[in-house]
Image 1 (cartoon, rainbow, N blue to C red):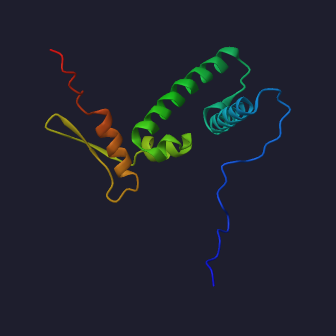
Image 2 (cartoon, rainbow, N blue to C red; image 1 turned 60 degrees about the vertical axis):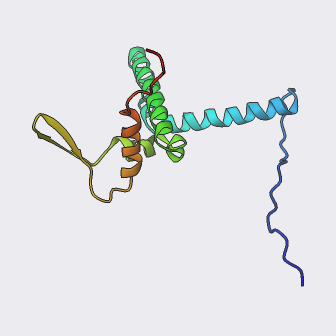
Image 3 (cartoon, helix red, strand yellow; image 1 turned 135 degrees about the vertical axis):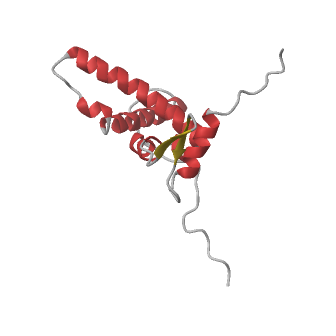
Length: 142
């Protein structure tokens, strides 16, 4: 008896239907870009943009500005932390890297951050901390 074939063979081709008059590769690229934008909007509506709209234009402008800064900082933080966190939602980044269940202690004019033992995000958080606080690389110039 022969071996059983693959149940779901992997195909590099997939059909799609569109009324976009652009060439196929360009239409697919635009569709994929649109999907990324939709994910950003959905992620944003789940956090800071939930406060919009306000009756005041300046309040809306302030929320959008703060959201843009926080979103970009969180994306950079996730990219520096790990491949998982680079693709994680804002809520996941906040839960894993921002809302740290830690305790600050002062001793001999030094501040020490005590992370909980067996904390599931400790490796990711310490990797991010070490990456951000690493000494600059030598450029070879004097």
